[in-house]
Amino acid sequence: MKKKLVVLTGAGISAESGLKTFRDTDGLWEGFNVYDVATPEAWQRNPALVQDFYNQRRKQVLEAQPNAAHKALANLEAYFNVHIITQNIDDLHERAGSSNVTHLHGVITRSQSDINPQLTYPINGWEIKEGEYCELGSQLRPHVVWFGEAVPMIEIAASICSKADVFMLIGTSLAVYPAAGLIDFVPKTTIKYIIDPRIPEVGRYKNIVKIEKAATSGVAEVVEALTTT
Image 1 (tube, rainbow, N blue to C red):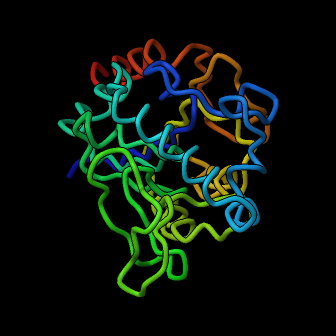
Image 2: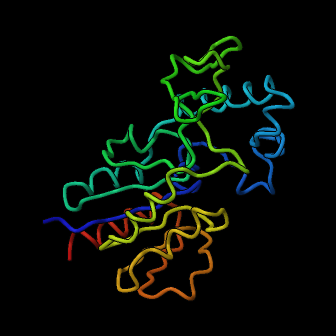
């Protein structure tokens, strides 16, 4: 039986595909304050602005390509039972070939009902337009978990982490909760590879291997270690 490899990915893995996030720019995301475009209050206040913002981000995601780190994780399925948990709203893991991906914060290539977040739909192209409604007659919005909203997949993700034989943390600052708390569910005896140019504070955890590199080079290093020993 293959060992279970659990991978938690954040902004850093998609940055090398050209996708920017607010993490590295003092709360600004493509020049916008995140609280003006990524909260329920922003949607109520100015839905046209929020919709346009995510339409433009969706266009960028569709134009981006999976990088070597995404592809390397997909290739690890030949050796491990790989389950990826991502904080990212892009679909680059799926397009790279990963078959088990849990999106904590939704995925921008889908829309959802404004009144029932469980109703989600694929998007044809890169735009959600005004006047496009869900089956309940409500305007469609991005299928993205905004600040102040519940993270419905967090309990499932915690359960996945609790069963990890090997754990990888890639490109995340461990600053956004509840996702940042998932490492607490990983068994103490499990080896934990931390890959980021700026390693977050992980001093209280055991069996840590720090790799202070960008995602593509760092993942390549871990893949070599995991597949040649």
